[in-house]
Image 1: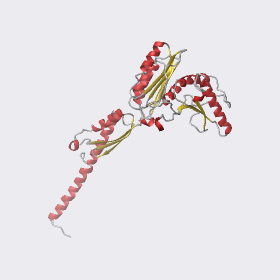
Image 2: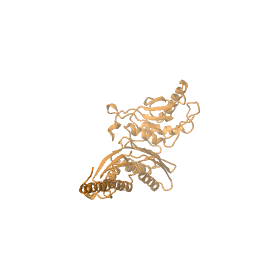
Image 3: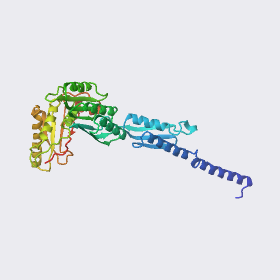
Image 4: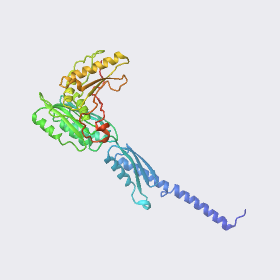
Length: 377
């Protein structure tokens, strides 16, 4: 087919326009593709600047940025969104900045707090557990060093997205009050702050007790503190707080048995007496004592039950009735060699999170793995 010169020129111009249009779309610095890439890079830089690059996932769709992931706190989430919204320049469609940020970031469930423990013995502080991010871990380390210069060992792992609002304040509060004691332990977990130990004087005792009358907002707190030779004057009616206090009382002590026998090894008795003294101040029961059967068979289960009874006998020396305990044999594949945990509450205290409530409004069963996880023998 013969084309006229005019038609040929028109086709050539159309082809050139098509090529130029394609280049404008995909190659030009102002093309949609280039703009999306530029905004994605700017958003990544913005997230890095606010230390959110470790937990947030980012996707660019034109001038829209989609953020997802699990934030360590609401403040971290807000900082990430604000940083991205200002990435490049927020000038709308004409200026070529981010026009919209879609928030798909999840906050950790309030019932899934990180656990932190602190034990004070012989003038030395040991802090272990988890922190929501590296910055929080460093702050805890710095706080411990200020309170116990040259006498603090801090070993924290990072668990992103699991700290409720106010966690850092709760930890500072617990460490400050523990520093007043001669010996003791503190725990922060599940929206609760637990502290137990010995004070050097009645004045110090009163100071710690007064502090726990006004704990950080959003946290249940209890301090079972006494002077040497004295008794705890408070009571605890929250199952999970009771669990944490028992764990804190045991500290870094280990519970072990004579190999193949239910007899407690040396040193275990005193650890369990401290735990029993704390349980005596609890108004919740029963305290389940479950010992892992070392192997299968009836003999192993029987030995586990006898060992549980030995633990109960040692704890009962502090004054608690035997009827307040329940001995159990845990399966051989149980994660912990033994556990102590309050299964129900006589009076369910109000908790910070509705998800921590079991049927009928009582606290859900709580299981506390003790510091000396492995029972030896």
